[in-house]
Image 1 (spheres, rainbow, N blue to C red):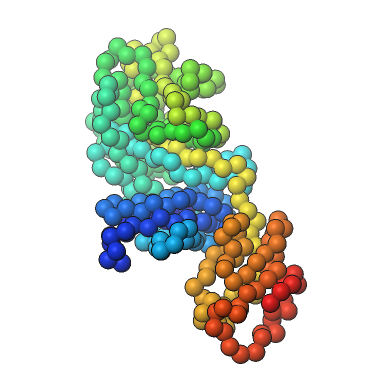
Image 2: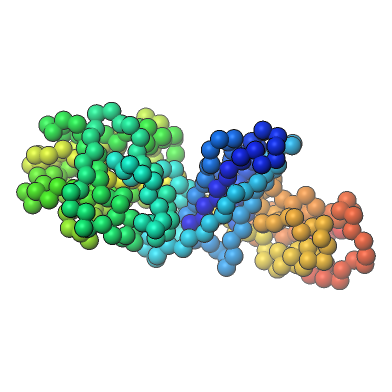
Length: 339
């Protein structure tokens, strides 16, 4: 997981929070709009193709100077956030601990993921686990995110609809995790809570109904690795015929799924040669990240071809106030056509 955070705070005295583009490993990530009053962050989960990771902020408008406040990288255990293809990319959309009063993160989450408390939700109440001895930090989810849940305000309700305000959907393909853990021991002992997972009226849990466990070391996860959802999509938990208590929901993670979304990056030997060039000339050191990608964000003083592994084809160094002999190692750019 890579997380980039931004807090403008009027650091430049201009009272004008800038907008710019965020990129990782030569891939487009997000269009960042910073704020004068609040911190914002973006997360992406993926399997890097190389041994190093690059994150760039790219200027997109005149006089809008990019900045970054914090950059964090966390490595997950194998098996967490698995997708159908190793090149799939997950862009965090929502991560919510329903019914929580406070923000949940490290040390309760060993990976320091941000679990936001849900806002005010009409028609539901929060139920809290009485026996808190079970609280522990699981690999997949911190225990404090499971310590409470939302459930319909009416004990006779048969359906719990996931609030649209917490989903904030638009038309796209999503990867999601929904977490369920019983908060009432009697409900689990009597098997009185049992429900199905429906999206736009279609039951998706064909293998069995969801019965949230109460044991200290268990929870139920419903996961989907590629669901097309629209702004009007309805996600609901619906009681099975033998249930006597309404459904509950403890926590949720929602990501935008970018299928096979990773570039291969600029040809590695060309990147290494550019690093040598930057080491020799101070004027070039401010440029970082993938030199050729994403398309349209090539470094100002070079051009590249459009191969699957782009190669540097042109170096435009005349406007950078450089002096001295032409370095011999420029011959290591076999595709260089113009200098």
